[in-house]
Length: 433
Image (cartoon, rainbow, N blue to C red):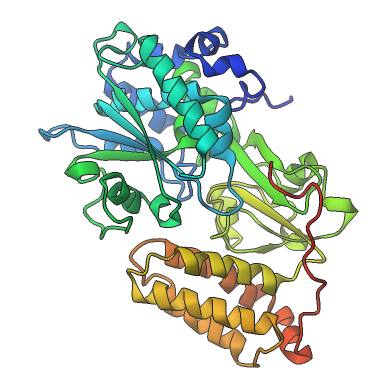
């Protein structure tokens, strides 16, 4: 049976950006149903569905909602993380640009379930088109009575705001995002306390990713059992968006059941660019470990299978590399990104990311030394688990996999005192849509 698109069903239907057009295509049925349920029932349904966060960590969404204390005399907030700054990731942009009402509906259901009367969407500052589309959709939702003093006539009050970031990757980290939202420098907080108890403005806060919240209306409308029928097992359920870029014929965002084999995803993209051989791929964004293509071509693309393979699904930004790719050069570029985006608050991350970039550039330029591979491994050990937030561990992922899986390429660079691969060229069709 062919897979029926769920999250992308309104892509190609611009009329769905409006409340009227969205309702004509079945939208807001989930919110209408949720408003007739008890808030706890909504949370239980999301828990039962097995929905896991689609932003990176894969934490169960319903469980996160249940952590919000209901006995505190404080406002509660939902903050939607739309700061999609991970290299190779562009799935949330697709949802906001093509189906903004779906996100608004998912946020509204979450707010009703946890008792939050205010929702903020923290959007990447560079997403100017998505920001404009979302703001127009919000105005339309207010005018249509979907947002405001009485959501769809229920008496539940909900205000909805967009907040644009200023180009800092670290603000994608949930507590760094909260600091930025409050008008402070975007630096991660010490945890605990966790945002569910002390989050935005010192109040209980739920933080979910765009894609996570976009799943919620469908779960409420069609039921947890329907959602669980999609996927590989009870821990990996529902549809998933994969943002595929690199050496493929048709890069872009693909919706498939979570756990689809990588081979099938690659085939959907038209295969490796120009019929070349698959060398490697990154399954979950720049922070995920690189996997060799020959060993993992049939790897199920779900949270647990990829974790067992030594990497992570993360944001499901899949970057494909063919046989012409220099792994040292590729990882050096990723290390440059993490070094640049480190907030500098933690010594292991601040110093370690800089040293990794310097070492990898030295190797790539043919100035490497025999001990550089072990030195890189040593730096990874000192960063991993020793930084305040996950950026340090993210920076380690690709470097560690380079040393462990592609040490022969490092040795070849050092031995020949040059990069043995051709210079990188810009090639048609391999830029992300």
